[in-house]
Image (cartoon, rainbow, N blue to C red):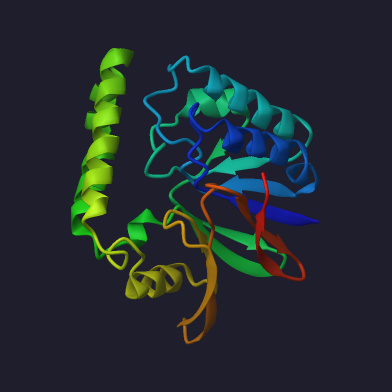
Length: 240
């Protein structure tokens, strides 16, 4: 048996192939897992659990089918879907986790997170993140009519694309010191995260010992998962 991790699917109605690939994954590989962890950005955008988007209902039903089959599903918010709340969690059967979580998996202590907070070389993004995670701002946004929330979300996505187009790849990647600090804070030798869309397994030193940072790939043209078993930690790309 094994525990599976995925992130950065960015599901949206404009990308039906990714949705179809995710549904096949839920009905296939995921059914034999000990658990499934989704490390953020399951959706391209999220403006509230009350959004009647049919895609959201379809995904909720599919995840609920997985959890009803006996495979628990856990979710850490990403920078795109940080407003997913208890209503959608209940509908889908997912369990919401804090932004940093340590798991004990087959004899390994593994820290999991979305990964955006590790991008400390991008202070503009971190300032924006702090603002949109302010509880009263979130409450105010969710109280707005849906059509206004959609407009705001679209403007924010457009602004994000424009801002990122002028940033270097290094700035948008994780900071090496931030990685070591978070691993030493939680006393772990394994870290699994997404966000950067740069799948790889990096070797580093943390807590005075060899450590490993596993980065999930985004679901653009193929799927990406990390498979943790008693024997190995594997980063696996697969076709939709």
